[in-house]
Image 1 (spheres, rainbow, N blue to C red):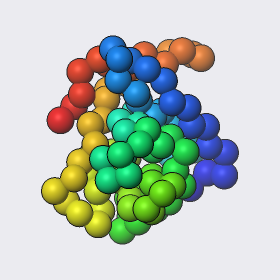
Image 2 (image 1 turned 120 degrees about the vertical axis):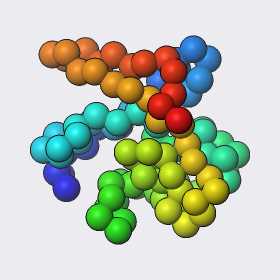
Image 3 (image 1 turned 30 degrees about the vertical axis):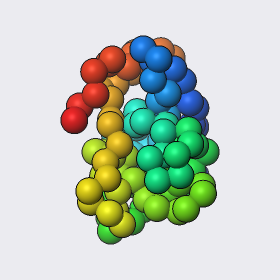
Length: 102
């Protein structure tokens, strides 16, 4: 995994979204819900990026459960899934689709 990582939280249609930019990865941009349903807080953007079982994940900063960036599925509890959003990267501008992929 690249050592350079950029992460931001933003609001899209009144929904808090966590954005991740990971240069050097096959997919460089990810958008996932910022709301952690276990911790009941908007903290996903402040989590720790890690590779778990060959998948890029974000670990919640409070309870350390991992969500896959590609599809939002919780590694420790597959009944929990965060919404992910389609992205397009044009130059220095990121366009985020307002409808979740799930």
